Amino acid sequence: MVVEVGYARAWDLEARAPWRPLSVEEARARDAAGLPYVVVYREPGREAPLEVRLVSWRDHYVGLWVYDAQGRRTGDLDMRLLDDPSRLLNRYFVGWYYTGPEMAEFDKACPRVTLDLFPDGRGRRTVERQGQGGGSHVTSAQLRDDERWLDLPAFGEWPLLSAQVHGLVEPPVFEAAPVAGAAEPGDTDVPVTCWRPPRPAQPGPINELFRPGVRVTDGYHPEMTVVEPRRVGSLRVPSGLLAVSGPDIDHGDGPAITVSVPPGEYVLDEARVRFSYHCMYEDAEVTTTEATAVRVLVSDVPAATWEMALGPDDDPRLFIEQQIVGFGTDGATGCFADAGAWGPLITLFERGLVQGEPDLDGYEDLDNGSMFLHHTWDAASGGELMAFATTGDGTYPVWVGRSEAGEVVGVVVLVERMPELLPERDAASTGAAE
Image: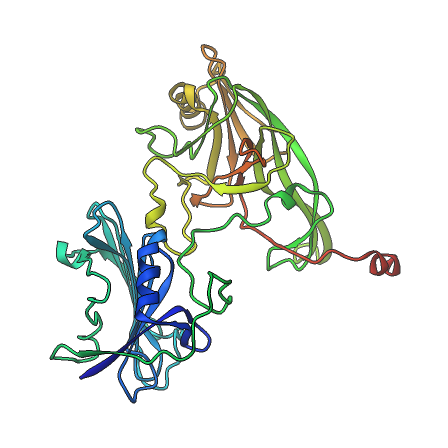
């Protein structure tokens, strides 16, 4: 079987076609420079590709998309180049098993298998049986070492990795695909319809959550208005290391996240939104105010950028699309604390909340109408802990705001999902409404 191999700058997801074809020499140069490019494998006479390989060494990433004769993606393999330059980790795989040629690509009723693998041997296999009697079944991924890792071929020497999927018994004969048109010089912007390397979750409009008058929506309530942030307390961090974690989980290795800040006492406030809704119990329109985020305000300087804080075991090279990391909670609770007094503060928290010791020095249950629940303090160091309610269990990212100079100006935890901004009303429409 003859397989044509072509190169391009990118793969257009909508057109299902290569964008800006490249010669072999141009693709080799991009490979050596770590720049993104794609490799397209086609069988002559077949409209859909056999597979598309997506490469971006600067992102430690190689992807493989496998297509069936109907042009539907049937496999998505995410590979990562880590510390060993001679092999790739099969980091993440999704396989779709269409029940017939008429089923649409990524149909919600399509059975699916997912593998989530890590370099230390951990892994999870999820089987989703959509449709009648659906549900999912999760087990550990029992794979051999050679199933977890792929020896890294040299440029131009990659095999057709999906050969078995396509029923090929003999190795294919590769031929260079003709290059249509000349590639444009430079690294011009790639259209938004084209593939890009996976990115972790992005911060969203965090600054606007603390800016009164901004209009947002959470998808359920069509319009919500940001109101003045509410100060709910202060936090002393004499050690200069701020801890952000769930106070209700095993802390044998310390807090989940730490952020370096100047030693001092900082304002804690909550972002809030006001909105109206129809209350079924009162059978009337009511207006309420809810918190969306909590913040340790380190400086009054506005945040120019926001970044997701990493824990000691978090490796950005392993992040898949929209992945989050942060602190976990099994009791819908998070906390800010002085990491230098973490052990004593957590002990006081457990003695006060879990064991319910009466009149415990160094612990108080706050009841001031805010979302903050509990406050502990270590008399020896002066460090403090403030625990707050989240909207549920799970993992919560910690967002660190930095000034133009790169200094930490705030640390934020969203207790609700990030709302979307609504367009600002112009002066004319506002005046007319009034």
